[in-house]
Image (cartoon, rainbow, N blue to C red):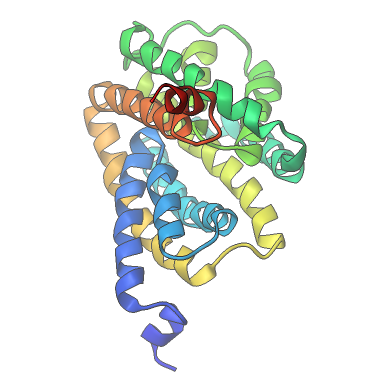
Length: 270
């Protein structure tokens, strides 16, 4: 069996090339502001995967993208490894717990309220003076951050997911006083940890399509290299508007769901 046959399996080479290109764009965007799943999950569903397998496989490719971005931010000296490792572990633990109890989480309630929270966050990113490249005032200790925000957001990522990167960003800026670029760097690390937590559950459940995930992961890895370098070089001028776009895009996507109250209200008026 040649290398191409080994990589493609039952999938066409052209399909995998398209998915790798999608993952490249998502990886670049994810490294800066998150939200790559808005692109990769629909692409995987269109490619023929069921929604749950699409989410699981998207987690695999996102892992490689997050490793790429985290490595770049780390090489740039933007990650405080010794200080942040407890939060990293607890974000992973929270994600595992979220993935294990996902069936017990009121998904419809979360879907209904999350878009409005994301719009509020987009407004915060737009107008808050704290969203700059400069560090601000730390409001809670790192120990408190680890046992509250890191666990809670990790749990949310495992149980639901959309907007996780934005939640981590706000937590780092508001609670620890990090500047935007520094917050982005640490967000990538904690997001990587939470992705690995939920991915481990998906792998155990046999939901990951490995060939697709690995091929897309290569694209995501390269894209994240580009995105993280842009974030480091350009800083808040790039990260801030993209965070606003990501929050609004996720909010709109959730509101367009037929089960969302806004969608039902609009449909009833037409």
